[in-house]
Length: 159
Image 1: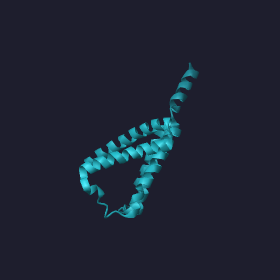
Image 2: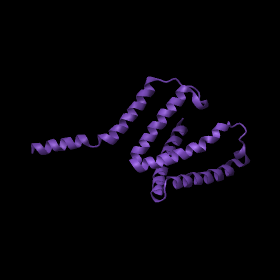
Image 3: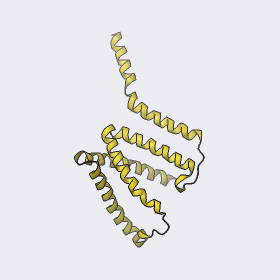
Image 4: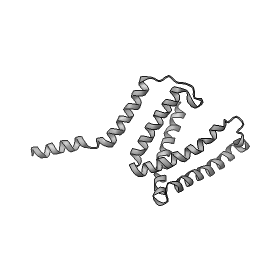
């Protein structure tokens, strides 16, 4: 379990870092060029590393269902949407929304047992967890330092 947690933390850090890089590339090129560069370089890197580590096993795709091949197309949507979202909202707010969306969608897939996943019962604790995280994003974005500004104005008025 610890290995899974550590790998998930590393993945989250890498996603955050990649989105910053993607947004910088997008500032100079455009969404489609950014997507092409990101996925193209990812393909070259994963193909090279996979071939070195797995050898010919990399091409053993006998047991893969045909519809799994479309995950690369989903990747195009991910990179394009996140890059544009970061451009419009800024990295922290955009990625916060992406994370909540990922969590909610994963919860739906798990609860329904879709996409070949083992069905996991939906509980009120899961719903409350997603709602708390969503509330945190709203507080982060819209809460600002409103309490601080209000306290400062009251202090200035009393002086």
